[in-house]
Length: 182
Image (cartoon, rainbow, N blue to C red; front, side):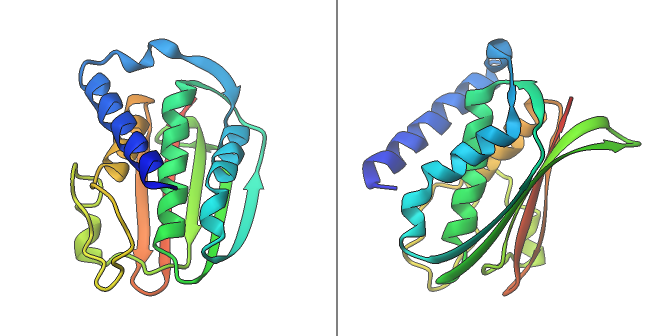
């Protein structure tokens, strides 16, 4: 993404975070195919693929969901963008969208985005969803950000009655899973 697009994305996130704090964001609820929106997010980030040798695996069921489509799209963009950014030159990313029934949450949709990238140390994982927190990336100087992306992901998941979790191991990659109640 170009610098102007990155700044535009940051502005959008900051404005949306401001709206979240005022509880006005969910007024634009609509029904849509969640897996199709995730596919579109992948296509939006296609230019980033040119810098890496990317293998992409997509396993998606058609998932009808009611939520704020525009705000959730930014969730997928943030997670897919991070999977690409924090992968090695040969990136392998898997995206899985499915409907599940859990005893704790009942019917929900689950979107998992996995990479085989640099991973996150266990002691850093507890902070990654905090506002403005960025995991130190050592010698990855080309990775830019403000520490808002994962905070935004967590906030949007919670505002849609869901949650986000991470499983990660340094040197082996990360899986971010978003669960949204139906």
